[in-house]
Length: 217
Image 1 (cartoon, one colour):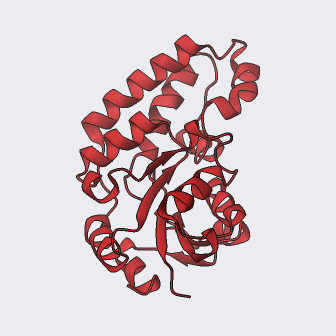
Image 2 (cartoon, helix red, strand yellow):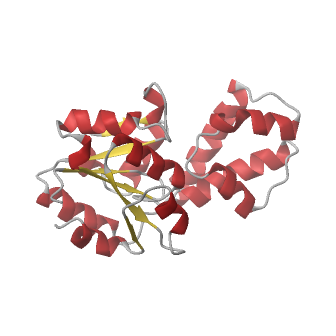
């Protein structure tokens, strides 16, 4: 299929933020009384908002998940991202090529809050490719795994979702892309991507350097 637009997730696809964000979350949950290993924390929260797991957090900590706690999390997260964030390997050349091939019809559609997404894109120098085409699940009726953020991105680009490719790295995100009616390309640098295929990914790849070719660029 010749795709008319390419929709990218942000965390884990454009930027290597997930270990940083989950590290801050794990530290704060540990302080609140819920001891998790880094692997356990990543397994539970990757691809999800913290608030979507509020009931589980409250059950393990015995405390309500307050706005003040979330504000502290965002502040600590942003400090660490500003200090340590890096881009995914090969992403700059890949985005440049995909952007050129599709005449700028690309977007960033993330489940994260807009401040985080735009800050991260600026930090790694990707803002020019996505300016005016950043979509946050926090601003939609429902965030991932619902398809809303991908449907909004496709509508803004005036491309039918079925003519879009979505680039994702989590089961939650793949589920959202599939539900939107797009073809999902799943980035799985560390394993065979079996869980991503099971969620409906049409293609699994291990290096961002391979993505332009897979997309027909």
